[in-house]
Image: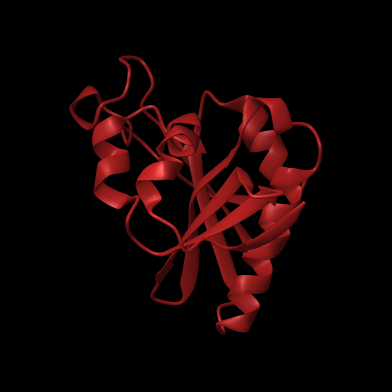
Length: 144
């Protein structure tokens, strides 16, 4: 498995984006932005880390690994590659947001060096394409 900057058409990655975000309208609003790091198994993309530079930090907008390739360390390697991207581009902070109900995601990020720094109340709404009853976003950060 190798990781590199994805140069192809982003529409081909939409199935992976949908693993990371349930809102079609939100994905449509951001998937063309920033840099995508892709995990390749041969020529097939099996995972992605979608990064968007902001003032003073990089946001990990999406992290996804295809179901058949999960639990093999690919997500961890993508986070390591995202941290390398930050250092190479003179950023010292990597942030990510996930649903407050997504306990496995929160633990995954905590186990890889992220710390919770904020909770956005009411972030995920039906108007943005998210299910009722799921509304708060947990934001985590990592110093790189």
